[in-house]
Length: 408
Image (cartoon, rainbow, N blue to C red; front, top):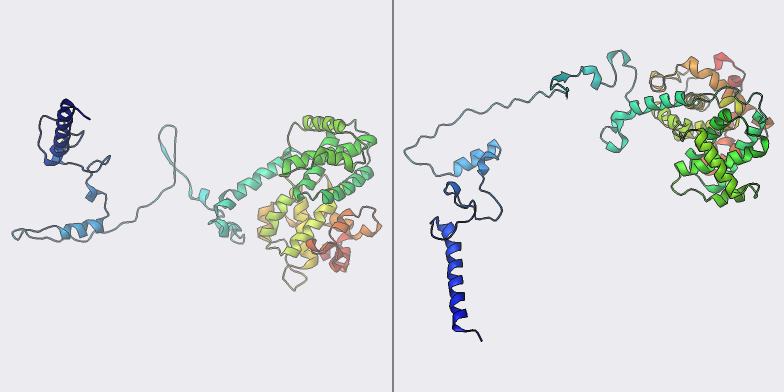
C-alpha cells in the first residue's frame, strides 16, 4: 500500500508530463522545455523522426498543378494561366573525368562496335545486350585478351625432337587419357587443359623419360581437374587408374614439379573457348558445333597439330564442319568463311586452309590409326553419333585431305 507522499509525487509527475505533451502542439512556450526542433519557424512536425519538408518542391510539375487547383482561390485574385512549358530533351554526352578535373569527350568511334567500312560484318552480340550475364559489351575485349595469352604461352613445333619421349608415345598417352576422362565423367575443358599442361611441361622440362610419361599424364589431369571441376576426383582414383604403377606420393611430387615449371600459369585459352565464339559468328547448327568438337579432340591426339594456336585450330574445325555438312546453302561453291567469321576469328581463309587440310588428313586416315578413343567416344548418341556420319568419308573430305584447292 502506497503512502500519501508517494501518491502526491506521482500526481506531480503526471501533471508535468501533460504539460510537456500539450505545449509543443499548441505553440505555447511555457516553463517546460520544448521538443527539439519542434517549433522552429512555427512549423511543428508531429511525426517522430521526420522533419517538416515542403513536399510541393519534390513533386513533378503536373502534380504541382493539381495541388494548386485544389487550393482556395480568393474572389479578388485573378487566375492567370501560364503558357505550357516546352520540354527539351537533355543531350547526354559520354565524358570521362580527368585528373586535372578537365572533361574529356570521347570520340564517337569508341562506342560503336563497327565502323562504316565494315557494313558486311554482323554484330553477333547485338541480341545479348539486354542480358547482363553475357557481358556482351566486353566480349570482343575478352577474346582479344585470350589471343594475347595464347601467344604468351605457345607450344613450339617439333619440341620432342631428340627426346626419349617420342611423338608416338605422346599420342598413346593422350588416347588413353581420353578414355580416363570418360570414366571419370569430367568436363570437356578438363581434357583440353590436360593436354595443354602436358605439352607445355614436356617442352620445358627435358629430363622426362618414358617410364614417367604416364605419371606426367595422370598428374596433368589431376591438376586440370582441380582447375576446372567443381568436385575433382580424389588422388587415390588416379593411383587406381594407373593400376598402382605410381604411388600417391609420386603424383604429389610430380604435381609440385609441374606447377613450379609452369610458374602456376594455367590460364592458356583452350580451342573450345574460341569454337563457341566462332559457332555463334557462323550461325552454326548443333550438328556443325558437335562435328567441330570431334575434329578438335582428334587434333589433341596427334603431335603434328599441337603447335597450332588454339584459336586457329578452332577456326579450322568449324570451317571443315561447314564444308562437309553444308551451311544451309545448296550451292557447292558457297562462301563458307564469311566476313563475320573472318572479323571475329582474325583469320583469313588462306590462314585457315592449311590447318583444315591437316585435320582432314587425320580423319581420312583414321582407319589406319591405332588411336580410336575419340572415335569410340563420338559413337554415343549424346554426341549425335558424329563419328558414324557418312560426310567424314565423303569425296569432299578426301578432296580436302589431298589438298585439292578447288574443293575448298
